[in-house]
Length: 307
Image 1 (cartoon, rainbow, N blue to C red):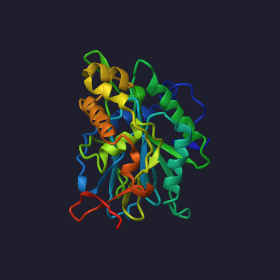
Image 2: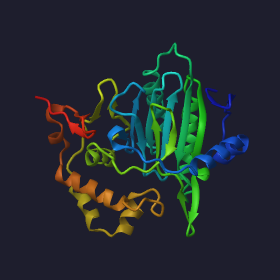
Image 3: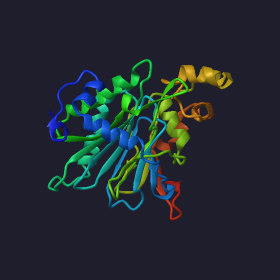
Image 4: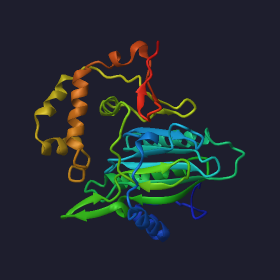
């Protein structure tokens, strides 16, 4: 069993409750993690990972020293880090294709880690809550099972998921931690919220909205964010949502209508407006090439225009 907890192999589990019963220190770790103050991240060294994206880098990176992701309700946020090389990866998993996604994350970190280095792969999970449909619980089990299937030994360190990430506010279950980050220089994994979600936030949201699969968005060797090329076809029917009230949008476009952050509806509308403004994706990717962004001296992300 390649998933270890305190150097004990994890056997097959049928529920997250069983996991926390068998490893009570994971409960304590989760309680400690969820009570940590939110860390304020400098956008000049930060890379945001959206839903169905991942990014990996090493401490040698001069452009990105913190990777993070947020706005997770039933989604789970994954941090995988090699303690020897310091290489780290952050992913935002929604359950769309967990079994094919997890090997990509392991490969992203191991390919950046010198195999002869001392150290081990450590896993940190956050996200989900006690939602009525048990979407969080199913995703928790799938992610754990997918990591168990990997040939590499992986050590589960933080497990702030589902019932351990749940709080009841005014009679409604919600997540405690919506976002996490990792400081690649220090290895610190922490709860946070993020306001800077670029570059190309709307384009990346549109990619996910139209069914794009898990994508690696960062080339750490060149310090470039890479988006696409994406494929979608004109769909004027989605304009329907722009005339609907907030409750209707939440009911039909969210897995957890009562737990979404306050900007969810506006985010959905902005994404739909972007798709209506770009009915075909081809115009956004001249010559079928991805959009590339690099970090300027000011710390902003700027599109690289090929000559």
